[in-house]
Length: 375
Ligand code: HEM
Image (cartoon, rainbow, N blue to C red; front, side, top):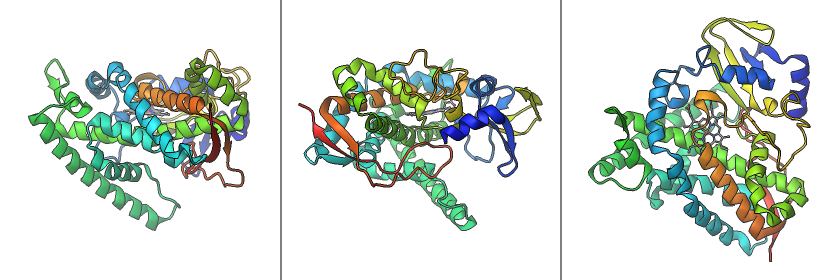
């Protein structure tokens, strides 16, 4: 998609799409203008019965974000590092002697699911259930037919009901006996007496599944994809693991897992020199903004230690990804482990690259590789 974005930035940086009935914004500066102004560009997309943080505007968003941030702190995340490390090593141990693996199924999918499940306090035995629910929640219809759409919506409603019941049970247990987990922290979080109720905790927990799993999976896969596209990067990161955090940032810029972010205008506004009326849908194309030559010199070149690197992969402003520290940590630990333990990682040629069937997600469904063990 990237050459097409480059063309659109040049010709129609802000354009109306008649088919999708929405405005598309392709330049960095314009996407930034949209994301930093929630009063004009609202996140309330309506239609959802249960409103999550992601779909709230101030003042409700401000309150709710402050409350969940009390539980979802940088310290809570940083403390997960040793666990993320050992889960990563276990997953790699399981495939190491084969000399081949599917990066998606063997590492990039299970790692974030296990981490979120543990963070929330979901028992190991329920992980498979958990993964199935979270898959259903993010899955769009495979084809754009009415019948499939109805089927997907029905599956989603059922998954929601099952998750609701499941979390209700966990909360009951944690209320009786708090544990060292996020659900217990969310139950006790309060700001001047203001607390989250059960329904809010469930909606937030489900948001973590929906917002955190597939995105992190794609970050890890896209990072490995980059390592196979430029073999010299493998040696560089093997010798200099301190470059990995910068490498992950550049992967986020270059192959952003979330391609676009939606808003609705609350009043008449102008983006660039294009007037837009109130009540219109506006899509900010992160994948295009991240390659904008006006912001990033030599945007189509992957620069492992690019600085500054103010990409929009996690959004910007009040809705800036709450899970960014966790996603970064998982990405860094996974890639450090891969660069330390494996070498000559190659994509299995001839395998078709199947993109995730959504215009808003950038990733592939499978990524088989061969490798050798590093000595
Ligand atoms: C919000 C991307 C991982 C939880 C966002 C937004 C983006 C994003 C672009 C802003 C959406 C908007 O402005 O409308 C990503 C990417 C990830 C990732 C690319 C992985 C590489 C995670 C993880 C979690 C998480 C691991 C939690 C476990 C959230 C939450 C919000 C959010 C709760 C809503 C914040 C708010 O509305 O205030 N994410 N995310 N994300 N993300 Fe992430």
